[in-house]
Image (cartoon, rainbow, N blue to C red):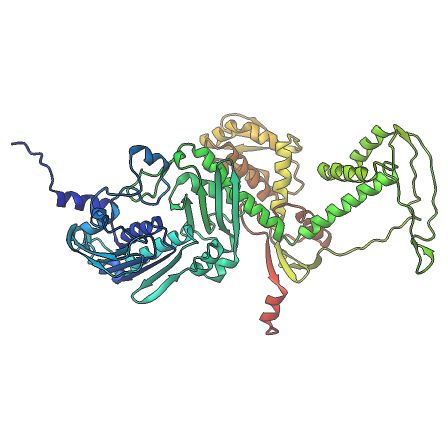
Length: 638
C-alpha cells in the first residue's frame, strides 16, 4: 500500500480555514465585508477578550434567505459569482465562498438572519463546521452573527495568538480601514463594553476621518479628487505637520478594497518628494477606482495584494492625483498668494496702459467730477508726438518689453480689450501714437505692503508679518529652495553658466566614485562643472557652476557623488533630482551666516514668487507660521 492518502473532510476544512482565518481580526474582516456586500448601511462589531472568546457582528443588510442559510456554511458556496469568467469583473468584496465555512470550522457560531423579502427569520447553530440546529425565529431584517471560542479545536493555532489587547488592536485596524473605504456606512466597534470607534455614515470621508482620528488630523488633511480616462483617485492627504516616520497611517484601496501595493506606495512617495521632510510619510486615504477587468484580486488568501494589467498607468494616476492636490493647496493657502495675484493684476494693468498709450486701443476720454466741477486728472500737460510705426513692430516691441510675463495673460487681455472695442476702432498698418510726459501724468496709486519685515534672530531665522500671522523663515532652507529652482531651470534649459577657477582643483576618488563621475559626466557638465580626467582616479575641476557664493567646491563635489551613489541606477530623474538638490543645498547660505537687511529682504522677495516656497528640496520646512491668536493665547489675552 502506498504512503499517499486522501485527507478527511474535517482536516481539509481546518487547513483551508488556516489560510483565510489566522486571528480574530481575519474573522471580523471577512464577515464585515459580507455585510457590505449585503448592502448594509449600519454595522456593529462587538468583541470580548480580544475577540478570542466572543465576536458579534450585526448589520441591517438584505439578510440570508431561509433556504440559503445552511448552504452558506459549505466551502465555495457563494452568491457573488457563477462561472470562471466572473473572476475577471469582480465588484463585490467577497467572492470565494470561504469565509463562513472557514470561521465555522475553527469556532462555535450562531447566526440569526432575516431576508428583507421574508416574514420570519432563521437561526442556525454551527460547531466545528457541523450544523447543530436550525429553527425559525422572530427577527428584524439583516444578520447577527456570534462567534465563540476561536480556535478552540485547533490548539496549534490557538497558542500563537497574542495578548487580548494586541488582538483587539488588530481588529480596530480592520474596522478603521473598512470604515475609511466606506464612509457611507455607519460603523460601531465595541471592545469589552467600551465604544472604541463610531462613525456617522454621512458619506463624507472628511467626517469619517474626524470620527476615527479626531480634530488634529481632521484639520490637517486636504482632498484628493482626480480623474483621467477610466481611472479615478479619491481621498484625503495630510499636510506635512502630521506626517509620520512610518507608513502606519497610509490607507490605500482599489475599488474600496484595502490593499498593500508597491506601485501605489512608490507613487505616493514620489508625489510627496520635496513636499515632506526626508524619511517622513504622509497621512493618506487613497481610493483608486478602475475597471475590475484591469486588475486581479484573486492572488492572495487575504486579498491584500492585487495584480495590475498596466502598473505604469496606475503609478501615473496616483502620482498626479496627489501632486495636484498638494500644489493646489499650496496655491490656495499660501500667504504669498496675495503677492502673486497683485503682481498679476499689476502686470495686466501695465499691459493695458501700454496698449492704450501706444494707440493699439483708443483711450477713454477724461471724466469730470461734477461734484467738484474739476477734471479728475488736473494739471496734466499733454504732449502729442506723432510718429508712424508699423503695427507688427509695435506688438513685437511690446512683447519684448513685457519679458517673462505670462504670455497667455497678455493674449487673453489683448483679445478681451480689442473685442470690446472692435466696433469702434479700425487698426490700420500705420497709426499715430500719443505719449504723455512722465512727470506730469501721475495716475492714482494704491500702495500696500504685502509683508512686513521684522528682523532676524540667531543670524539664522528671518521674521516677517503677513496680515495677522507671523512667519519665522529659515534662511538656509529658503535660499536652498530658491537656488534649486534656479539651478533646475538653467539645467533643463541647457543654459550652462560656468565660472572658471583661477587654480584648478584636483580631487582624488575611489574606483567606484570615479565610475559614477564618468557615467554621469553629462549631468555635471550641464550644471556648469568643467571636468576632465587627470591621471588614475583623479578628476581636475577647472570650472564650477556660477552660483555666486563662496563654496568649498571639492567637498561639494564629493557630496554630490555620494548622493548619486545612493540613487537607483535606472532612475535618471532620481539621479538628477539628488544632483541638483545637493548642489543647491551646498551653495545656499548657511545658518548663523549674517545677512544684512537688504539681503534678507531680497531673499524673501524672491522666495514669495516660488510656486512651492514652504519646503526645501529635501522636504524640510522653510517657514513656521504663528498666528496672532496663538501669540495672544500665550500671553493669556485670549
